[in-house]
Each structure stands twice: as C-alpha cells, then as structure tokens.
Amino acid sequence: MCGIVGGVGKIDFRNYLINGLKKLDYRGYDSAGVAVLDHKHLFLKKMPGKVEELSACLPASLPGTVGIAHTRWATHGEPNERNAHPHISMKRKFALVHNGVIENFKAIKKDLFKHGYGFLSDTDSEIVVDLLEYNYHGDVLAAIKKTMGELEGSYACAIIHADEPNRLYFMKNASPLLLGKGEGANYLASDAGAMIGLTESFVDLEDGDYGYLEPDGYAIFADGNPVEREIVARSKDFYDDDLHGYPHYMIKEIHEIPSVLRRLLDNYLDDGFVFDKNMLSMIKMASSVHFLACGTSFYACKVGVKYFRSIGKRSGASIASEWAYDPYDIGENPFFIILSQSGETADLIKCQKVINDNNLPNLVVTNSKGSTLERKATFSSLLYAGVEVAVASTKSYLAQIAYLALLVASLKSDGRVEGDIRTLISSIEKILADDSKIKKLAYERKDATDAFYVGRGYDYLAALEGALKMKEVAYVHAEAYPGGELKHGPIALIQKGTLVVGYITDAEKEASSRNNFVELASRGADILVVSDEKYTREGDLLSFPAVPEYLGVGPSVVISQLLAYYLAEAKGLPIDKPRNLAKSVTVE
Ligand code: M6R
Image (cartoon, rainbow, N blue to C red):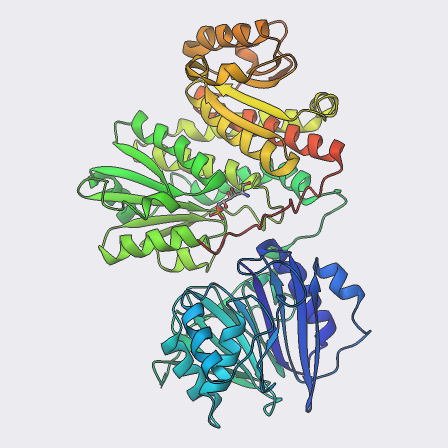
C-alpha cells in the first residue's frame, strides 16, 4: 500500500519526485525515499516520516538522468530507514521501488541467502531487487521476465540499472502503474495525479506488463512479446488538490459536497436519465443485486440495498474482504455493484476477479477513471467528485448515495429524484453555511473517549458511517448500534457522560428511537440528537432542513463528518492523515 514515482530524461528530479510523492502520500506516509542516477553516481536518501521531512533533508537540486521515489505504508517491517525504499541490490547494480506484497518472499529470501545474498531490511521488497540482480546476465529485460516468473503476489516496480542511465525499467502485477508521455522525458507512477502538470497523456499498464522508458520513447512487453497499450488523456482539472484557503482537505471536501451533487445530476440527467441501457436491462433481469465494498463505501452500499429493496429487487451487501472467502453465496444470475472511491482497493480487486472469472456482470462506481476496478468492469460509472485527498471519505460517500438514488429511480423511471436531490443539496448547504453549533458541541466533547451512534432503519446506516468518521479522524472509540439492539448487551457500557449520537429522520421509527434515547439518558448518557426538522423536538441539539426520508442519511452524515472533524481539530490531531491509515488500501 505504497506509492511509486519515476522518470527518465530532462527532468528537475527534486521537484518532480517530491511533488509526485506528495500527490501519492494518500497511499501511505510511514517513510519516503528517492534515488537518482547521475552518470555512475547513485544519489540515495530515504527515511521514516512524511515526504515533507524527506524534502527538508535533500539538497537544492538532484541532477541526474533517471530517478525513482517511494512513499510507504508499512506491511513487512517497521517504518524505519532500513525498511524505507528505494532498495539497492547487494552488488549495487539495481535500485528499486515497489508497491505491493510479495507472498513468496520468505522462500526466495532463503534461496538468495544460499547464493550468498545478505539482507539489510525486513521487507518483502528487498528480495525483488536482489532477485533481479541474481537473474541478470547482461540483459535487464530478460532478468525482469525471469524474476516475474518467480514472484508470487502483487507488485508495481520501478527499476534503475547502474549501467543504463537513460532507461527506467518497470514491471507490474496486481498493483496500479501508469506511464506518462512527456517531451524529452517520460514518467511513471502509481497514479496519474503524480505526473499531472508534466503530461496529460497516459498509458495504463496491464498485469504482466514490463518494459522500459527512455527520454524519447518507451517499450512494453508481455510474455516476452512487445505489446501496444492505448494512450489515454486525463485532464489536470480533475486533479485540482489546492486547499483553496481551507485548513484541511477534510473540511474542504465536506464543503464541496453541494457542487459534487450538482455535477452528478448534470452527468446522469439530461432530458431523462443517462445510464447505459444495456446495463439497466441486465439489472432488471438479474435475480438479485449484490453490493461489494469496504469502509465508507460499504456503508453507502447498505443504503443502496435499501433503495433496491424499495423497488422490489432482492439485494444484499458484503464486505469485500469477507465475501472473497464465500463468493458463491449470492444465488443464480446476480448483478454485482462494486463501490470504490479509489477503484484500487485490493480486497475488491480480488472479488472482481472471482466475478469476472465466473463471467458475471459487474458495475463499478468509482471516483477514479482508469483505475484497476474501472478498467476490469463490465460497466462503470464515475462519481465526478474531484480528487478526494483526505483519508476520511466525505464527499464521495454523498456522491455514492446520490448516484444510487438516481440509478434506482431510473429503473422505475421516477423523475422525482432530481427534485429530491436538489432538496438534499439545499439542506446540506444550510448545514455548511453555519456549522458553529456543531463545532461548539464537538469542542465541548473533546475529552470523550467512547461514543455510541444509534438509530433505526436508515438512521442506523447513518450511525455506522458517523461512528467510522469519529474513530478514524478523532480517535474516539465509537460503535454504531441499531436502537433495538442496545438492550441486548451494549447498554451495560453506558455510564455518566458517555457520548451518544442519535439520529431521527423517519416518522415510523421516531417513537422507538426516542424511547431508546430516554433509556440511555436515564443512565447518564450525554445524548446528542440529530434530527430532520420535520421530527425535531425540544432538546434535540442538531436539526437540519427537511429532506425526503430515503435521503436523510445525507444531512445526518454531513453533520457527523463535521462533528468528527471539529473534535479532531479540538484535539489537535493530524486530520487529513490519521495514524496507521492510508487513503487507498491496496493490500489485502
Ligand atoms: O477507495 P474505496 O472506496 O474502495 O475505499 C474503501 C475504504 O478504504 C474507505 O472508505 C475508508 O473506510 C475511508 N478511510 C473511510 O473514511
């Protein structure tokens, strides 16, 4: 779960590699490193910590002809200098950066050890650079091909050979890697965002691809034969990651929600719904719609399940990492919907492979055009949310909910959804226009150590997402429970001052939920009720302008995002990059 970046040719390596790493540190920020070859001299600097710390230790310029860099989310080996990339082979012929996990690294390490190799790090990646050197007999491409045949697992690697200052080699399997075509220079990275500004022409590599870049060209091979891959254009507008005056990406991205929802309407409505007709008829014919996702996207799926059930379609949702163990439990003729902001989540890639191997149809709904999941999908739809930088998913959750509402409405040709989403937008705008009360409530609770998020029906789904935000951003132990479940055990944990966030957006369940809140208050809980103004009662601390019930999760979740954000701010936490996390979970 790392990010790699590299280039060859006339390049200001210091700027390119450091800026590229900054764009990729959503993939991990445990350590960072660069290597640049200048004639025969290899400059290498790597260290634990964020890219900014590495940058502060680099000279003003990094002259050279070929360079690579890495930002790490530690899998094998703690985040320290030894385990940071780039790794250098024992005889110093090769330098390499790797994103992925080498599953058979112990066996290879043992073999290399027998051949006299010693190791400096605890990583699985270091064996790759030594294996390349061991397999090298004068032809780097041949060494790469042989090495790929011996590796099991996922990898995207950028490789420098000490005697070839005008070539940057690469190889890829099951980890993302793109080439960028420049003028007098060529680039590669885990994500186009790292190369944007230098080029808008990209080549998405396929699994099994390897080859090299030179300043004026490149070559791609698969199975020993040259292959052509399509050149695709990606506009720099999508990658705008300027903070625009906001102190953090998380708050900026929450404030972008209304414009994201408007853009979604523009893309999926145009004198009627704009969805692939073939896809709609496959969904109609399917015996069930099954959702797969992780984290926040999974909680959006749970909303999608309710939408599909509301039109009489059998529907369910599974957490991707669990479904992969029990993939056939979905009945005959299913249609899969995979939700993934990044389009690169490893557990989903594994599920999609099972789905594709069984020739089953799948729709990928993602924010990342050209991502691994999008490219392998039967159908794909974009969220048009713009780049989401903060590790905490915010605007993409709202886009996912609105997309699913539009999709289901299109299946029953119900045009009312447009007005409903516009009502949702205006409700959210009013919340955002003055969030001072949310901020005050959050600051007053900055010492909370535990929180319970409670609701029924859609409100329980809002609770799930609210609790996740509180955990990951504010480091408060937070649990979501359906109101009816509290008395089956968890209420034992409620004591004086325990924070409870409760949601009320639904007439049918209001009375039962309010009873739950009274029961919790009698045991001393600090109850913070979030309600749709249609149901607001005296004592509810946060009320939002009314929306249709099926969209009530929208404002409830935006308020929960703000609560988590301000509580984290009050605690002085690293909001955009919480500890131990990465934006894109590219290892299982
Ligand atoms: O890119 P994806 O939507 O596939 O990511 C799924 C989860 O990793 C992600 O939603 C994660 O839970 C967020 N950090 C939550 O804010």
